[in-house]
Image (cartoon, rainbow, N blue to C red; front, side):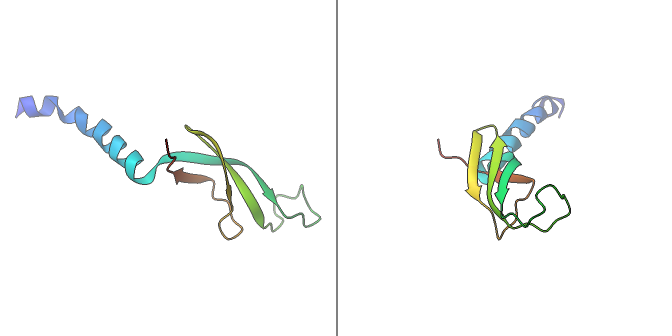
Length: 80
C-alpha cells in the first residue's frame, strides 16, 4: 500500500492533461469591442459586445461575442 501511495502524485498531471484535452486551456477576456451607446467610459452602462479578445497560453484569440456578452474566463481548444 505504501508503494502505491508513492505514485499517487501522478494523478494530478494526468488529470490536468485530460482536462486540457477535453475543455482546452483557460483564456481571459482583456479587450473587446462594443456598440457605443454614448457613454463609453461609464462602467455601468448597458453594452452589446461585438468581439472579444481572449488572452491565454496559446496567444491572443479574437472571437465573436456570445449573444452580445463576453465572459471573463473561457476555456478554448486551439488547433495545433
